Every structure is written in structure tokens, then in C-alpha cells.
Length: 559
Image (tube, rainbow, N blue to C red; front, side):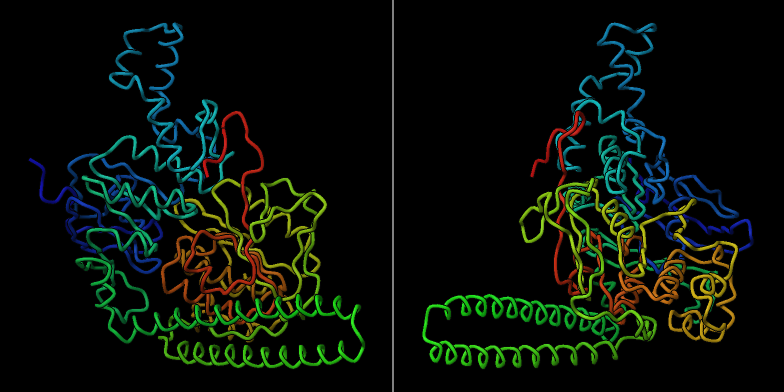
């Protein structure tokens, strides 16, 4: 008979080799079904999963499990030498099948034992992979290495392997990071149908609304600057957890989200109105060529009055939405906000930021407004535009951002998606052994230590915290330092490139990111699968990428 609690954590104690305590007497149980494990960055969620998986050993206490779990780690993308088949855990069986079916086996009995009843393994694994990747899979795909895959493709392959194995206990650490819409919805469906025990850490609100229960890691002493004793707090579901935060805090966050969306709508409608005005003006100029001058002037004056009235209405509506957003933002708890002044990032409308010819791109087909760019067209960003870059896993979004960074005509801030060893966040340009203040001085050598400390305080690093080495920070804290290093650099960035910026961020840190970006006055290109985040950014345009050509191991897009 199956135990009521397939995972039992009893008085768990754990500390890192440097002495930093993560858990001190943590007790928790996980029942059959899917549990969403939440908590702020640095609360120990990933560490707890690694302890349950057996990757780490407790200092004290015990962890008992009904069976060995299947574990998907955040740093799965770092195992670049593994093949797709190896990542899925089926390489040995596929090799045995190939030898037996090809009549090349030198130990037939051993190969038959390896195969067991899995004679259709190749077909089943291919079908599951296609469900996650949304493309046809050829035989050569199984031999590809993680190095040749995008981050999203790697996570999708690992998830496909777990689904294929149908384990009784599954541990998933931020599984939707980098996943496109197709892969995310595949995972949502698998979790809804699961009859096993699943523990998933995630900041994906859609996924959290699907889980059977929510468990939150919280410090016992919520006022402690450095919480060492954590407790597990249980909730029936995500909505009950949200209600427990209190109506004021949860409501304030929702009001900011609603206000951002309202402002995005007003900006979009103003852009559409300006486009219509420009189109009508062009049509009017053409029509005026074939009519008497006095009539043409009358029509022109009428059109200009109408355009002026429309612009006035749109400006008033947008200004009202901005006032509403500011009021909602002011009501947010302090920890949600990053208030910085970035005047040097401001750029005028029409300024050339970056331009590349479509023929120079070695990435997938690029669409704008549903139309494909041809080899003779240019990809250009002018003025303070905000552009969302979307598309499936592996189509080349990161490659395109790198190409644009090299062609930019203005200072660039580039926040690449990156994950360091051991599950920790690693960000380009940050020196682990240096303090936050020293890292910032490298990016802005002309600023005084006092100026930098004041600016770090806006990122919630106050007082002596600025002197702490980056190596001691949690993932969310490292992200804030990396963001500060980019935004506060000298010269100031005027083109910001963000590659999946919300990966591994808790909801407070995502709100802090949005708050910081509100002060940025330059152009911005954001590659993301996070639809809520893109909606909150109020982007002006969308570039969508598709796969360029078929290859021997990728048949074609199914969409």
C-alpha cells in the first residue's frame, strides 16, 4: 500500500561548506499529487529539492522517500556534452535496440535484457519529443548534444524523458524556464494528469494555479536580516496562498499590473491613431494634386484640426493612465520598488539605434506584423522603441540579440540568459570574488563610492551589504546586482537587450525589474516567453521568429 506521504522531511539541517545555514530543523511532508513549492529567491527551494533528490547530504535530520525521484535541475542546460538520448535516460536501451535490429549484437542475451518490453521505445520517445518541441523529429535528433540545443529545447528534452519514464516521484526545479508556449502547455497537461507525487518549484503563475496544493518556505523570524531557520507553510491552493498575503499587499500588486496594462492599451491606441493620421495625410496629399487649390487647402485644414483633436484626446487618455499607474505604484510595499533616475539613457524619437540587413542574419525567418522580412529589407530600431522578440525554442532569438549587440550605434546593455554552476545565477560581467560595490565601480569608474552606494540602496542593498562579495548572494540578489551594473554603467546604455530576464525570478523581483525598467529612456528589445511580463512592458512592436529551413533531424514546423 502506498504511503500517505511518499516524501517525509524530518528535522532537516543543512549548511554550505562556508558555514551559511540553509535549514535548521525543517520538517515537512509531501503527499501524492502535485505540490507547488514557492518562496523568495534564496529561501532554499532548489537546495531542498537537491537534498530530496540525494544530490546533497543533510547535516542533521533525515529524508525518507518511497522511491528514487526523477529530478530536473535548473542547471540541466550546463551538461553540454550529453546527447538527447542520454538526457532522456534512454541511450543505453536505444543502442541495444539498434544492435539487435541491425543484427550486430555481440551479447544478444544482455541486449535483450536491456530492451525488456521497450521495443517501441524509439517511436514513443519521438512522439513525446514532438509534443514538447512542436516539430517533426528525425532519427539524427537523438544524437544531438545539449550544446547544439537552445536552453528551452534542452529543458523540453529533459521533461520529455521524465514523462517517458513515468516516475512515481518527480522533482522539477523551475521547469518552465525558457520553454515556449507549446512546451509549457504540454507540461501543464502532463502535471494535470499525473497520478504520482510531484514537487515543483516555480514562479509561473499559470502552473501554480494548476497544482493541487502550495507549500511556501518562509523564515520563522520574518524580521531577521539573514533568516537561518525556515518553516514550511501549507496552503490549499494558489488562490488561498494569495489571500493569506493580505488584501492590501496582493491588491496593490494587482492594481499595478492592471494600471500597466491600461497604460499599454492607451499607448497602443495612440500609436495606431498616429499611423492612421499619417496614412490619411498621405492620401490627402495625393488627392489634392487633382483638385483646385482652395478646395485642397480647405480639406487640409479640416484634416489637421481633426488630427489635432484626436492627438489631444489620446494624450489626455495616456496621461490619465500614467497618473493611475503612478498612484498604484506608490501604494506598493517598499520591497517591490526600485526607484532610480536614468536621464542619460534618454534618446530622441527617430534616432538610429541599430540596423542590420535581413540578408546578414543567420537565424530563423523573422516576422513583423505577420509579414516576413526579405533579404533586401533592413531590421532597424529607432528612438525609444520597446520591442518584444518571440518565437519557439531553438529558432535563434539569443543569436539575433547577440548580432544586434555587435551592430549597435549606441552604448548597449545586454542581460543574457545564463545559469552558473550549482544552480546559482551567473551573469556576464560579475566577478564572484568582488563585492557588489567593486563590481559596480568596474562598470562606472567615474562615479564616487558614495554615489554608487546611494544607487545600490535603490536596488535594496543598503549600508554594509554593498561590501558583501557576489559569491555570497542568492540568485535573485545576483540578478539585481547584474541589473544595477548594466543600468548604472558609464557610459549609460541607450539600447537594452534582455534575454529571458524573468527566468528564476520570484514575483517580488519581477516587479522590481519592471519598476527599474520604467526609468529607462532608451530602446529595448526583450526576448521572453513570459506573456504577463511582456504585457506589463507595453512594447511598441513584436518580432516573431520562425525556423529558417528544415534539416535532417528536424523535419518541419508543425504549426
